[in-house]
Image (cartoon, rainbow, N blue to C red; front, side, top):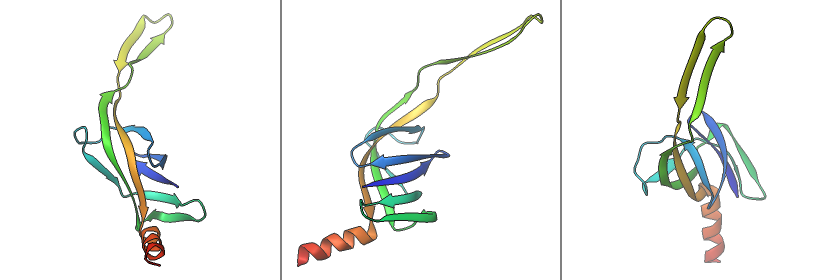
Amino acid sequence: MYAVVSSGGKQYKVREGETLRLEKLPGEVGAPVSFDKVLLFSDGENVSIGQPVLDDVQVQGRIVAQGRAKKILVFKYKRRKRYRRKQGHRQAFTAVKIDSIGAAGLVQKEETESEA
């Protein structure tokens, strides 16, 4: 089972139990996170594609870490012009562990099977 979610202007393919690094999200470590912009959902047999999003599917997770990535150097140089600019940048990120991917239709199907 997997889903494709949109966060921070990017799209991520997520599965239950995996950890991914996203653009910085507000919240403390251990806080729950819900992704409501689910673009695609697959339960192994059926694939649902949103136009543009799926309303009945939600991806739940929790924040594992807040941090900053390794420093990258931005160096601008023009030869023979005495022009040099050196600048560093560290991008902020949030590490999120995916706890559950749920669809309303999938939950109803499981409940009816367990009752029988």
